[in-house]
Image (tube, rainbow, N blue to C red):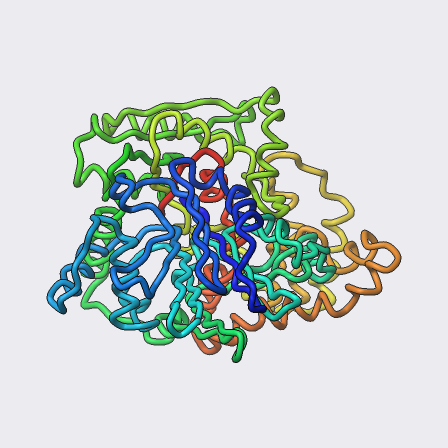
Length: 519
């Protein structure tokens, strides 16, 4: 976990070093090991480093290539950097460090933006070409590493790993985007191509952007997840499919175990995190695997007993720490670490777990994404019930919702069955895409209208509702139109829910402690 910043001046003047240094220091929590700021003509790049691979100062950033033409800052990790390095060495490229940063730099020199298609990793990067006076920005395929940017009044551009670092620059006013605010109240997060700040945007996942003062900003998508859903593979048997899946998981875990610092894993006892730890045990001895769990006093939320049973069965070194009301004093620090407002109920326990884990290791593997990839959420069951009930008369569906909403008791357990019943019957009047999207709603459109007051209500109104479904959920459903409904639902969740917000909570909260989280 590192922090990147940058400023391309729109005038003949170079960026102000002190302003860029303050932008970079605003990300100090992401990288406690080193800080670097370089000004070169119209460009200035800044970096905060959390050292994971090649701990030497030679791997510090911003990093120049041997010719002095290129300058790069990079947040993340390239898992297949060793293979890419070997290929580049056959082409005559020489390396002065063991870092994946230098491999990334040389790969872009060799292949341009097409190098991104060769990378297996999580990354947000910026590369300045001094000769062409162009900036390349890029993010990994699923947007695991964040990258925000803003255009400046003079025609220039600033970028950073977190939005608040941009507001340090006097050209970024930092006003609130009313539509993004409405989206936040509807979803508990801001969709991934926006920011709560009016003039700040996020580079979408699987995209790169090229910027120069003459042509402006041009965004290109270099990878398409929807194609994988439309072109499904077939297998001779379920066993053959399972065997290949296991090999893929083992390979993914193997690549994420590359580290020059202590490494562990989150373990909840569920299928996703347990699968990751099981794969780690295929490649490491149980005594060398460290696992971590945060527990709760409320039984319906507490997963620590299951995690402890799994850990004991496997013989791994396991640690549990319980979250209780006294830990509410962590709330201000958690809010600061989130970067943007984030109302996810797991935020405080995840922040607590990251801090607890960082006392022992610098890198932690996580099962994040398992539910989206393997249909683990109960909402997929709700989708199936919705399709079954869609054949019943509309008046019956509306009557059922009215009665349940009126007579069912309020349940304060973790997603109790009364709340599930209300949600399901309320969605029966909608088509499948809108019904599936509604599982994520916190405040409905009518409630949102009541919350917004005065000028805010006028600025949001129907525009926010249109943007939220048609330009967000609806757009992604259209990308896999004709696929099986379950495939559509998991695809949309990968493109929306797994990315909330761009500064995903577990990885960003890890940054608050200098912890890197991988999945």
